[in-house]
Image 1 (tube, rainbow, N blue to C red):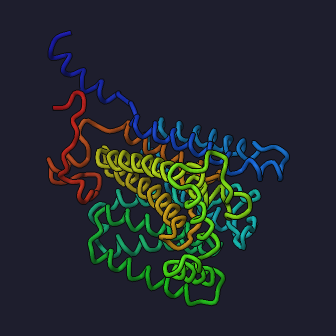
Image 2: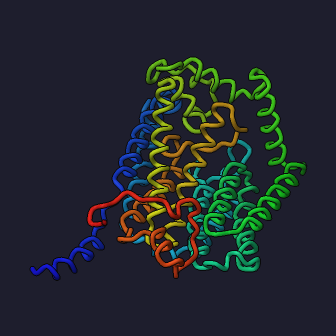
Amino acid sequence: MSVAENTQARPAARKLNLSFDMPLAVTIGALLIFGLMMVYSATFDWSYREHGNPATIFMRQLQWVGVGLVCMIIAARVNYHVLRPLSVALMAVTVAALVLVLVIGTTRFNAQRSFFGGSVQPSELAKFATIVYLAVWLASKGERIREMSYGMVPFGIIVGVVVTLILLQPDLSAAGTILLIATLMFFMAGADLFQMGMVALVGAGTVGLLMQLPISIAVTGRQRLADYLAGLQDLTQASWHVKMAASAFVSGGLFGRGLGESHQKFGFLPTPHTDSIFAIIGEELGLLGCLLVIALFAILIWRGFKIASQAPDALGATLAAGIVCWVTFEALVNIAVMVGAFPFAGNALPFISYGGSNLVVTLTAMGVLLNISRRAEAQPLTRKVRATGSFNDAAFDLRRWNGRGRVSRAGRR
């Protein structure tokens, strides 16, 4: 082969290179293994008392992990651009499921938010569906999202319908998560400060109005806020949940009591295998175990935003940023609640808490993120914007990422 032919073959070979982001994949695997270990530790006694087998609940979680990994592999191999024509159908199915759960859903903890006895929650699908739909919508609008009729008004309608249906369940944490992630995506896609101020004003006014109404969701929200404020002044006046979590962390100390040796999971700490699993980590594995979990999430966030900054187009960048913001917010709120730094919200700890819907949907989203990393072209979106001054598909503003230096890769000067 001549030098010219060899030079022409190199870009083609790089284009066909579909290798994914290995650090991200390893981090996801580590979080899954850690989560399975903690689910078994938190449930073996309860599982034995309820089912006569200490591994029954663990095996259910293992099955959900298997389903989630299959979905992640499929999402990682199928080009994420197929989501563009499927986004409307995905959102339609999500809205239909949110309506249906209000009619025939299972009622648990005074909320009607799940199917099949609590195993499937449409609100978890709604988080991913909203990110996909908004990513496609924002990428298609480009600079026109700064116009009121093309930007903020349609954005408010899209997000408002989903959030309202979730609030009717009621599910404060899921509604708040979707509202915050959607707002962040709108901002990163290029919304100006005036639009963001209007979104914040309308959102704050709506929340304030809901909190004053004599409905169950407002009563629950006011009680959680009152418990949080009381706990900030005096920990003994905090909610039972926060006090038991604090007791778990104090008991664990630096190195923990040992895996499986938690005392708080035996009827003291509510939902030790879901919302409270970070407190169980603190009691059994100590501060070092908690720092390990936080470090793994930090790596995941770092790799996710790196993938977003190197995405080949606006759709990939918006999708990646939305997914990373979602996982970041879920993990941050769960940990903050357990240490008493945030009012109780009920968010699961991604990859670690027990539950099928959250795990499968999160792993599917990770598959999309891996797919975006595989499809990256020789020049990322940020470099294209710097070189040409614009991007034809859409205007995607990576804020502080634009102009940032990048680590060189093989085949690139």
